[in-house]
Length: 200
Image 1 (spheres, rainbow, N blue to C red):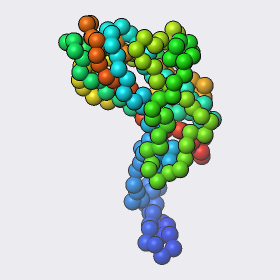
Image 2 (image 1 turned 90 degrees about the horizontal axis):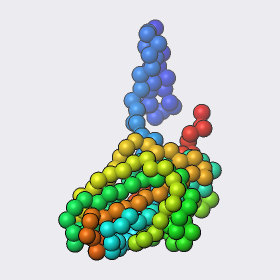
Image 3 (image 1 turned 60 degrees about the vertical axis):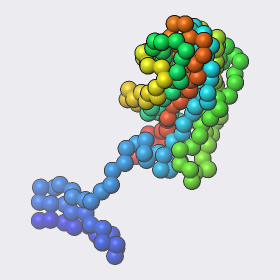
Image 4 (image 1 turned 180 degrees about the horizontal axis):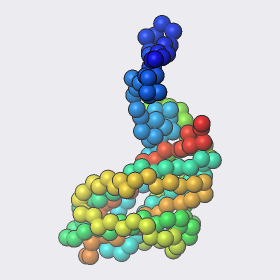
């Protein structure tokens, strides 16, 4: 025997067949898409930073101060042309807590911009995004991702979701090619606040 479930006069129908399988017409959203739809998806971006040596510089710091996990879905490395040939090294640090990027605390140019342009939601507990710059440092934190990136390119790095519980941090170092004296860069992340994690 088959059982059909109908929603009023809307014509929406779900059917349970004789094998106890449920048949529905459905639209599927990924978690990131769903959170952006309800106003919980954000971008943070350093803005343009100018690096004038070939030395490593701390350029971006983000800390989750929300009551929910933050999930980073993409990282963006926007590297301008250098006056010197060669590749650029981008290093991602897990949970840095020390260094002049943090102690000097300059807000990133785009700090927690909502990706749903119709939403008035903001990051509730003032999670922080700081930009660094030439000669700025991180002096702790574990290296978790390191990428050799061609200068003059925009790279979108997707390594799967990166989950940041409340209080955790992420940092980015950039090392330009040998001989560099002029290179503009931006580092950005896309993320969502995981408000649905504990919803049954």
